[in-house]
Length: 279
Image (cartoon, rainbow, N blue to C red; front, side):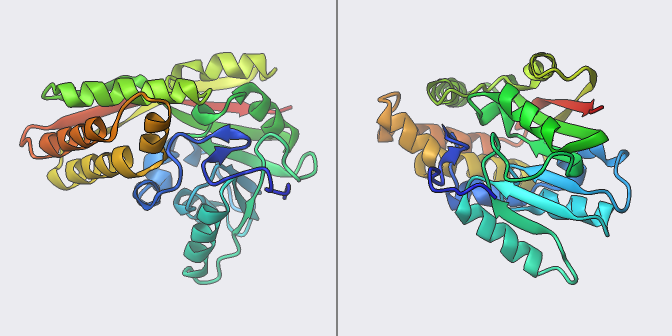
């Protein structure tokens, strides 16, 4: 893969990754599955396909997808060496797992043209300073007839009940940090536009949701964000930019805990999804 010497664990291919890879972030990502994060792609998967997962994180989705295309080769790529080691450890726990994980640059993959049948990227384009360039690089490594499949949240669609000023401040702060990092929190609605700019013409778009009301799911979601606000790169960057101090971040974390205790608590979001066929 491309040498990662210009990366840090908070970078996404030379950009600033808003979340970073604090354990509070990685643990939330490890709960993701192909079913809850890539359902729009599953009907297109066949045994023997070669699959590339870009921005694979700790590899939970990657390994699920690998089981569906086995014995096809699967490669997960991420800019973070730390999270790649986590993914490799997860793969080592699975019997006869041949999935590989490597550090790489999403803008300049050290891979030949026409290498994969499927390129998948989940919650990745929103964090990039040039998502169009990333889509072009995905298209380069796709074989004729292959698919690019991407899914990104759209933070402008986030909704919760009951209303809470602390969560309103959280969302505004998150958006501020994203924009300061050159990222786009409302990526979901922009996927078709980015595809057109990248020269992709055979495109299908869809949407799906995540929602949280069950007490255990609601608590895990809230506690994860509470820790991310105070302990991860999100909080660090907010302080660095003088967008919030530690007291305000602690108050936002408390707001998440308050919401989690609400018996009628509800949270939902929309994700944009896109499948583009190449050649």
